[in-house]
Image (cartoon, rainbow, N blue to C red; front, side, top):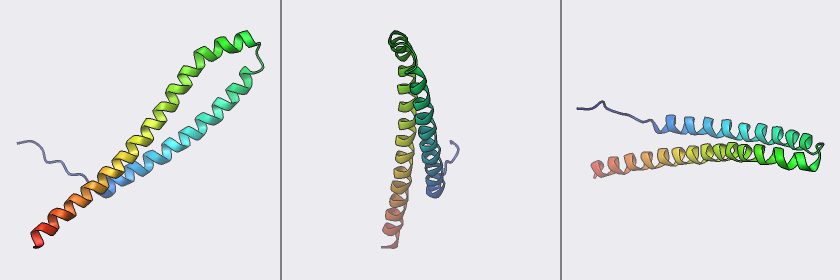
Length: 97
């Protein structure tokens, strides 16, 4: 028989909350760094700007998508905790009848 797994809804919410905080902080830092880089790139001749942007922008978009994924995952984790708690309560209510 396999090992018993237990998930605390409060623990799941705590992890989700920390993930959201970290992801939003990372987005803020990322956007700030991107603005600085963008300002620096604007000082280059147009031909170099285009070349450098074609290299850097896909990376920037990938990083941003990573943060968006973390936020979506944290929200799904919080929702799962809510559903887990609701299911536990519904099962408990059935036994009280």
